[in-house]
Amino acid sequence: MSIVENLNRIKKSIPSDVKVIAVSKTKTFEDILKAYHTGHRDFGENKVQELIIKQSQLPHDIRWHMVGHLQTNKVKYIAPFVSLIHSVDSLRLLKEINKQGIKNNRKLSVLLQVKIALEVTKFGINPHQLESLIHKSHSFEAVKIEGLMGMASFVDDKNQLDKEFGALKYQFSKLKTKHPSMKVLSMGMTQDYQQAITHGSTMVRIGRKIFGERST
Image 1 (spheres, rainbow, N blue to C red):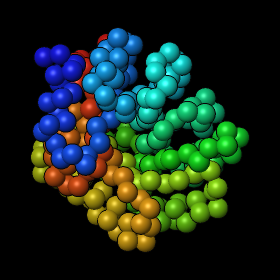
Image 2: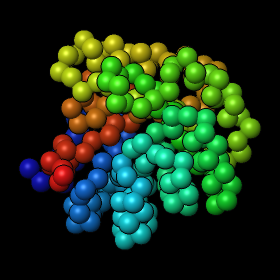
Image 3: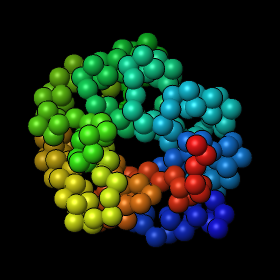
Image 4: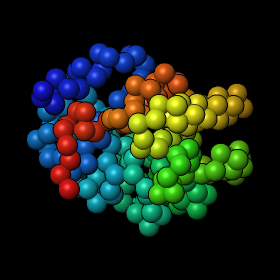
């Protein structure tokens, strides 16, 4: 199937209030424009260098999402335009985002990445540190914490995924009672987004199922 057919099929198969982030890393401008011309505007990138190139060359009404691990020294390159940073996993990074938001006269929207997977390679904040981090962020004038993000283990074990998605949903619901402005729960990717939605995900990050396999 084509990119357009893939994207339309996915959108029709999920609740209308779940936002799809089309993860376009390694994909060509042409591929991204095919999705763009369906009316889709939310695209995600994993690497800062690729993100800034695409942002400069593609239509400026695209909402760019930084979904990969973000180093503090790279924040300055995306702060002028990024729509949402999904991968905030430390106070140090949050401080730098605030600093660059002030420099660019922008309030930058972020998600706190929570470690829910078994793999040691996955980044994320320990759930027990969330409340403390949110409390410390209250003095940051150029940051808005919109919600949480998590990456589940890359496994076929549905019970394991249920545990991980369920754990993140629990943390999100608990925090939302104290912080009503937290509205985004970003969890679920190509291989597990349908299961994530059953656990309350409001935002899914889908690449291969829209664009096909990635170039290496």
